[in-house]
Length: 151
Image (cartoon, rainbow, N blue to C red):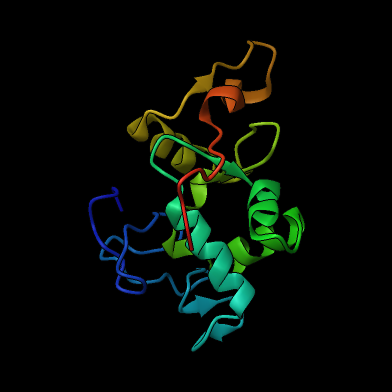
């Protein structure tokens, strides 16, 4: 999806790797709030819902790390946040939750990079010696501290 269509699962803008062009969850390994790795999910665990709510609060052009979200929630850690996003995060702006070093999520670099460029997220160009010359996020400028946000 190009970002202007709506996902039928959470009624928010969805991301291409997890939904079909019509906004429906992909059947083969797709991950979304309604469809996890274990099939249809009727109700999310409370922690997962909280993680997804924070991901939805991150403004376009800004990012939070997995650890930032765990710290903001006051529970769990980066791995737990990553697990929630891997299982249920297809219908939220998953590209705004990143690694602390600013590297793009392996396997999702093209779609994440397209989102970052569309939103104007600050990037640092990769040195020519870097594998694939994939830019990194400029964490100093892109990182959002959650100021003013409430769940």
